[in-house]
Length: 478
Image 1 (cartoon, rainbow, N blue to C red):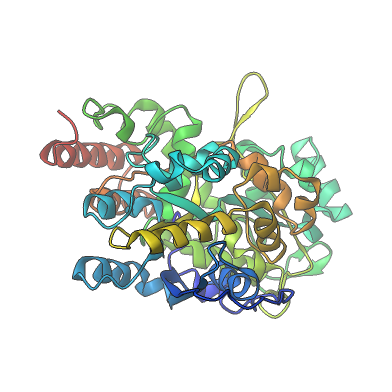
Image 2: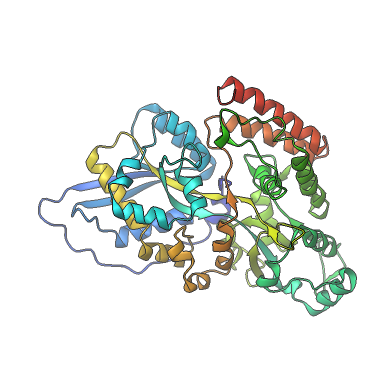
């Protein structure tokens, strides 16, 4: 995800961890009952938030404030949120949004600008300073990277590597790989953190096995593949991985921060962008053949890995819980995690640019001042260090540097060691109201290249031309 769209199908099977109950003293005389209705996608991070709020949140105002999330399945979430916001029913005081929707819903007058509240509140200012800048840009700002703030992080997410430590660390596989490629097959997470795309190519080639061949000394009953990452036509699936390749090559997607002079033609289809997309496409030959059908989305990547049919994948952290849970994964005790690979430069350093995932939550514009203050107090509680640590211990992620930089953070989940360092490499896709038109055309053309109907250059030329025309017609560029 970029948006973890329909993610609940993979994750809802994971039970929300029980949290320590904390007694709530009675409200003082004269306290009001205030309910914060919040639209949220139905998946573990929002369920954990609700559980924490029920057991531990006490409004500093003395009012009895209750969080009432409307848990909406991911497949219907955008449509139902949009229908509610645009209908005039004013049902929600808060909502979990996706960063791509910010422009459309802010321009529509539904999301509340928060600057005056932040400017007047030292506690909110301190929280803002503690949030990683990439998360601030992606989740809070419109226009993107401006100083206009509209949201707070609810659940930050990003892409990391999942791999089969049982096969990567197997002595026989280690010996065979070194004999073939003349360097050590990564085994530990620290070694895997040093993997670049050339190593990924070798991993993909090396671990391609057919049924009957051996893997880590055991005969395979099914075909086995080396690598997999997002290459799906649906929603934003291919774009989230392709954007990373493009940025790593020093190229760019259309950059809204440069309006009105940010053109698409010559940028989106630059030589460097074509080279990056060609590199992305070249690695698909080492993936399961479903990649050529345009259906290698986040759910198929997740399924292939949990079913034990692929050695190495790139996936959102949000899928990690189902991977390490025996009830939902055949490789629960065989999985390890590392930072997403990147492009190694002449200086030996790896460039790891990637597209951020996760979601912020926002306040709506029709709340009275009392409700707005209570909603902001809830945000301050949610983004307090103590609450964020509890959230992280229960399986969530925190965008607060004071939390993810603490040594104990890496002990909460096996992928947490990759989270903090990866934040430095996150960028985001567009926030403008034209987001969906831009994305639908891009996904269509990317899919043609992935399925062999077009070359990388043909696809990017078409995308650039479409974006240039759309953005001129909408007045975004001159």
